[in-house]
Image (cartoon, helix red, strand yellow):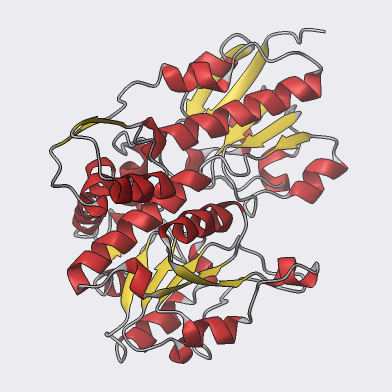
Length: 381
């Protein structure tokens, strides 16, 4: 049965809302951090991203019957309370995993070029091999990079190929964190890296966090890095965001405002996954396909090749971390307005497409370069 017209409240940063949900009801968009109980007094559906805490304080005594988060993570959602109150829920696992993997690869290629090494000459450690970690694992493996992996929940489930965190810290030249944020259970990730184990990181290593800020104790990281400036820091997430520790930010090579997964493709995919989940809950057939949404997204990049390009050149033609870093550092100048500036950077984020959306024109890449391009997610043919 087709549901009656709905009252939908959504984070203003969720794309394709009108395309996917407009035929279902009236959409009211608000800044995600400001959504409160009074905004939901007539809402049937709430669609959020990671900055909105969805709990009894937000939802009690409202008519909301479906909550969706257009993100991989769910640490901001009280899913037990939703279930206890028979409120439908969906997240979007994997929606922006490719975007995060491409963010990581872009950053690692930048550091490799600056420091004069090849990724194939380094051991990369991936901590948290879920939706994002698997994508990164596959792409780096296809590039010929040596990997070590740490994922206690998967190891506890009997899967093989994982090592302890202590062993990874001792072996990895590059450490990439991609865990969800958990504070309970057998393997909590809160302050996974802390004053006790940061000292085990290898000299000259690269430490990248594109998961959740509190996975690293930021105060401990700042204190430790004052004596270990040989380690290159790449941070997309911050423990108290939108508040950023300016002293820590001054020590990073690349810092960004939690935008690793902010490709247009990933955000649209997340919205579509919520649309599909709602349709399934209501027993109706989805009327709009993901391919149609992506096809109408526009801004697909066309890269003209002249035969001189390297993999790094082509990757950075799609995504150059330096530009985001400069905008981020500029946002730290006014301490009083810094949290608002953090959110504005996210709200006004430039269109970024995933590698697969790019067209490569001009001189055909060499077989070796074509293999590398395919490995990281391009379609060179």
